[in-house]
Length: 429
Ligand SMILES: [Mn+2]
Image (cartoon, rainbow, N blue to C red):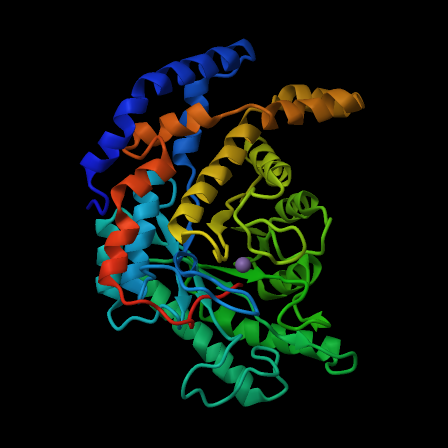
């Protein structure tokens, strides 16, 4: 099922075909001289998928304000359609990650059918116990899974189990748990007891997982609790995942660390421990900024992918990370940001695939520091744009993502159909 007409995509691609062919051949020649088969890299890029967050197609906001965009999705079916546009043009985003209760729906089989008609599926499910819902018996103001009150904890556990059930109907196979629990003042919370309560609550959720599901634990150093959080870093996340069992793993959101933390090293540690669940990709300058992937620090994103490609290359047992975007689009058209971010993540992956692993091993073992560093830079500095464009073209996508999307008039069309939105929804997690 096409949302953007096939003719629109073809018309956008047509004037670019000749230069695309030439650029791809030129890059192919460059890579061949390095002993790299461009078609083999392209085949791997085509296999690569990064899931879309349903909340990412709405306009986000800050603690100060939210400026709604035109034609914002009204409900999960609109979100699915917008995600469908991103996938249709990029051919890289077949998965959608839902967030309940934001994406609550009375008929999940209808939703699943519509996604499948778009050639899409449901990726990890996300639960929300960081804000209160209408008619909720117990407030999460002072915590959810780790609340001092047992009834509040039970309510949060029950919500997570309901999310698993919705996900089961949608064909998902993972639950991502992120809690806003923590404290704003020294002395407010007993650190060890709060963590114990987390393990107790999370164990009850873990027991409700179907056999083929995984549970992703997402850590975050601060916000909304600004003095301490219960699952503040990969260490606490790893302790919790170990306590829960083999189906529990640690999810790395790039924005959930202190500035300058070596995230690629954390990734390597989690891979070695068999506990890397996957990623929420985004970028940041100061904190959990939720900027578009690779917009500020593309080399860091590349270095993360360098660890991932190395693990796949070395055949690390059980290595199977889930890839997802998690961004807040405050000043751009969310579809445009998601398309460019998906392409950026693909770019980092392709660049990491270009690293000469045999030469790198030799340089590391021989302590040839500069050569080792330059082998990474060589991958990063290769412009793989023609390769990404060729992969999209061959799969029916757009060579020029932005140009094609804007030419389609999609935003104006949905703006006419969807009433202007007033605040609400969306979020940064
Ligand atoms: Mn996240």
